[in-house]
Amino acid sequence: MPADRPSSKKKTAESPVALSIRQPWATLVVHGIKTIEIRSWSSKRTGPIYIHAGREPDRRDDAWRFVPKSLMEFTELRGGIVGRANLIECIRYEEVDHFARDVRKHFNNPDWFTPPRLFGLVMSNAKACRFTPCKGDLYFFPFESKLKTGRE
Image (cartoon, rainbow, N blue to C red; front, side, top):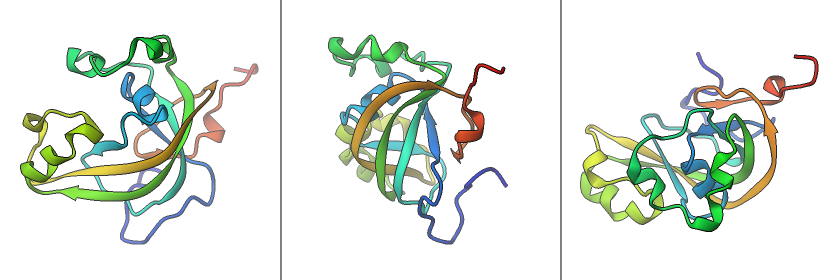
């Protein structure tokens, strides 16, 4: 089972974990513009999480139109921790109408909804932090062991 793959038990952050998000979405999350991250899996985890900017950016033009010019430089940060947020809940989207109502929070076109369901990781109190290079992973992952050091 992958690190912290969703389970039936409620998870709280006992040790620091990160969630990898492609740019520019990672930038939008850590600057509080995007408050829901869409996934195909659910989670019971709540509490503080770190935001990891994946090495590969989202290549869709739609992704980039939401980034203010003042944050474009931040979107160049890739392959490391760029911020943290408080994960407050995971909501289930089973209907396109429900998904469409939250479009201003997750920025995904309603056409993107795929039945039978998608999940929204709802975050608050997001903040950018000093960039720390590290390898990403799927789901939530303990990132301290993945930090790049001068010994690599």
